[in-house]
Image (tube, rainbow, N blue to C red; front, top):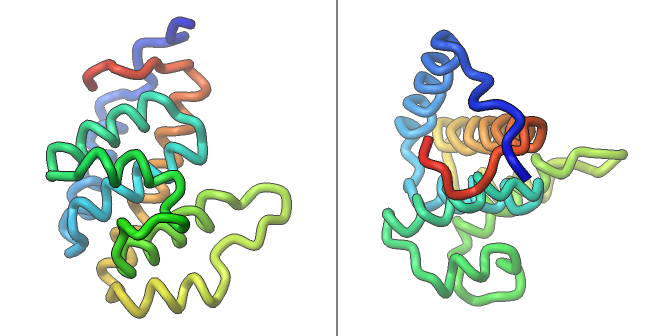
Length: 149
C-alpha cells in the first residue's frame, strides 16, 4: 500500500499544530504519560504510522520494551502506575465515541481528576484530540509507518 498524498498540511495548519503541541507540553504532564496516551489512542484507531512514531518517541523518553508491548493490555498488567492507568482509561473513553459508546463516564473522569489538575487534564485531552486528528488523516491518505515527519 502506498500513501495517497505526500501531505495535507499547509503552512497555516503546521503552525497551528505546533502551537497545540507547545500547549500540550506546557501542561505539566510527564512526557512519558503523553506518549502512552498517544500510543493507546493510535492503537485503538489502528494508525500504524502513529503507533510506530509513538513507540519511537516513548523509547526516547526512556520507556521499556516490556511496558510498550503491554500498553494494549494495560488493564491486565502490573506495569503501569495509577496515574498512567487513569490517563489510559480517559484516552480509551475519549477515543471510543462511536455508535452510542458511553464515552468518558463520571467514574473515568473522577479517576483522572484524582491524579491530574485542570492544566494537566487540558493537556491530556488536547493530546487525545490531536492524536485522533492525525489518526484520521493518516487513515484517509494511507500514510505508511516508518516515515520521518
